Length: 231
Ligand SMILES: [Zn+2]
Image (cartoon, rainbow, N blue to C red; front, side, top):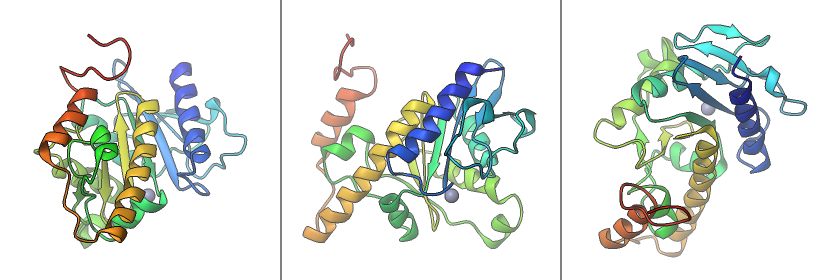
């Protein structure tokens, strides 16, 4: 069942480790098959060493495992909320990568200081609200997804393909799980650059709108022209 997607999800999880975004088991990646309404996700607490596609868990949209010998990642309910809310995403990644997590812990959205960031997102990297005590007590992982979706009420998730969960860490997504990994890698670098930018220039303002527009819109959207094989 979903063998190709299991390979993609296993590769994505291993790539997060190779890229230095995940220590121990602090991360997970998933992908969705929209036609069958099934999600393939990393198993919970299984070491990366020796992780293989057949270890991935297939769950339905209620989070019930329909195939796999392991329990799915505890963060599965968060992934499912994002897939339900945003039909255009095909993969979700969660890490505790160092710099992005520092911004999340500081409860600060990441301002767009330059073109590296503008290539990733059309403006700041949003910060989702902290969870209330009640939201933590009941359905914690689902509520992490809910506060993220709430933050995106007026934001296109494809224009800011990653978010900081307050006091927690980043989530990233994309049309595929490989793209979600790429966005998580780019986010970590952007978070590191922003940190160092503020160290050098504590009062630095965000990038000018015309330069933000140029960089984001040449890579994304209807009139994109960056890269090969476009218009
Ligand atoms: Zn986490």
